[in-house]
Amino acid sequence: MSNINPKIQETAVQKSSVIYGVHFATSNNIDIVSANVANETARKICNVVGRPLHTSERKNIAHTTPQISLISLDIQTGKQLLHSPISAHIVDNLNTHTKTAPKAFHKQPRERLTSLTPLSNGMFIITCVAHTQKGNFNRLVFIKTDKSSRIHKALKVWGFKQENSTLESLLETKDGKLLGIVSLRAGAPPFELATIDYKTGKVTYDGLVLPDLQPDQRYSNLTQSPVNRKIYATSMGIGHRMHLVQLDMENNSLITGKPLIIKLSELHFNNKPLENDLLSLSVSPLGELYAVANINHEPMNSLFTVDIKTGEMTLVRKIAVIKIAFAYS
Image (cartoon, rainbow, N blue to C red):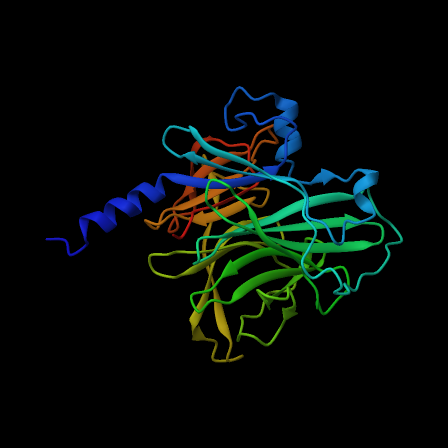
């Protein structure tokens, strides 16, 4: 006989059926999860490369967060349950200086959403990165997950070892620290792990004993299982082979004395290996692994389940979001 309280088990099942996502704001409060959404709208709100920055936005981009939409939907039916527009917001640490370096060669200024992170207090953190000729600017947006989806606070991220580094993924560890994957080249290798202070947005490199990341690998999509507390991520190396990996914080390397990164499985769909990175990864309250990806360069992204042991991905449905997460409470 099971020792699990039926009410607790029922609550976990209910939470597993509801998933949250974020995308860039639309002009109208429409049901963007629906497959009937216009292709052009879908391309704008869930663009992998990012949203172009208007000239009027660039002046204060270091101090301002973008307009975003937070949605939730029922995984089984695809029904949208919530669509909350999140307005632009001035950061709380306005006077904090962010070290950046002007770029000699630069494409059109753009904004990316790099993480949707659930917190144990019931909030979410949305991580956004602006790429401009003057440098790269990282900001955190703390969002309440009630129906109001109000902004609790917004912070600049600062203190990187190298100018123009970007925060590519974020996770709250079981001991309450914010663990981040940092790119030294705006989304390209090399990458490193660091911690970010909740209150100040400062990046530190000595808050935890962390694994060493291989310099030729792209790392992203941090997530942690609420069932067994295992931390997962993705890695992509030479040949564009995409793997699911585990950050084993409980066991250390005999050589370095640091926690291990264990390669679990190569990700594939319809017996074909993935050629591009996932957009997002999240574990449900029941321990099921979900991913967002755009495998065939379609207008709308897709939601998949992922078999941790085999790496096989199974299509669930289309979903017009960039990042996903499950609420912890």
